[in-house]
Image (tube, rainbow, N blue to C red; front, side, top):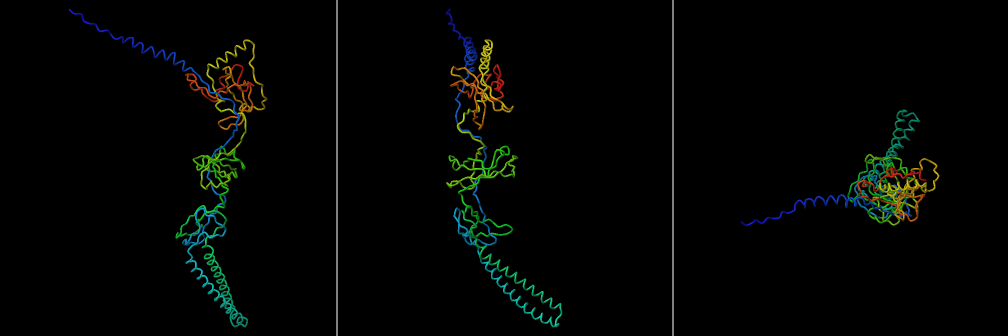
Length: 426
């Protein structure tokens, strides 16, 4: 009989073992080494200008605006000015149709003549009745009635004169709308043929501005920041139309009346701004920075530098080195202890971690100054080696330090070096 050819079995067991072992080895050795890698971002202490600012938004408006209205009702017959026209005081802006006003004026003239004639007649009658009364030809009652009629005729004459003056004023003054100031037309609310009604309040026909060389900004400042805003304080602002141009001004007024916007209390702050260039227009939205304080060319570091948490391995190594020095009766070198007058000084104390030229780590105590939200002014720094690099960020992929790139200063103070930390290092 012919022998069967036996097929060789594929080594599946070996393949399965390889597929299991390789990932385990990778996870245990190779990946763990990568995860434990820690890198540091460093920088030098910078010299810069820093400012403390309060930000807000506001609306630009012209200074000294005047609303021009009308005291008589009627149809707009003609308009003699338009938007952006320069006008002078007493210049005619618009004229109302005066047909009805002319009729009223003539009627007032006729009423005056009638009242004058009646008054003259009553004067003659009163003179006659006075003679008759003196000779006892009429009673005192008839004499008194004639005297009363004379007084009424005189009163009617005065009323007729007033009505004529009013009709003349409506016809020759109020029907002709004139500019009350030298200025610029920034708004026109009427069209020819439109009827305007002068009732309890005069309707607005034009809005004039004394000029656009000076502008006002009405800004709303949150109640938490209003205490930092003072009269005469400098401001900077930008507008969306010119985002690359920075304008300047100052605070003119802080109004006491509050406003609630979305359940948040705000106060109105009026600022003045120079507009000699003429690019600022009424109604523009301004993004404003109120300059609370400023420092020029001072030493400063980023805020992240003052909130560093170092890896546990670094802290353990520094602790071991400290114990070794103490065992050899060597005291660590400390910076000079500054004078401290109040307990609140501790709020101005910070810690900077650094990397020395030889690659070793250390930390220096600093006295903090002004903070602009990004950088902090350094007033004094103690025990910082020459050419040391300030650590601004810790990048660690290990599980134990995955959250410790930059944390709060209180977290940093928990990782204490032997021999004290915080203000006690001075």
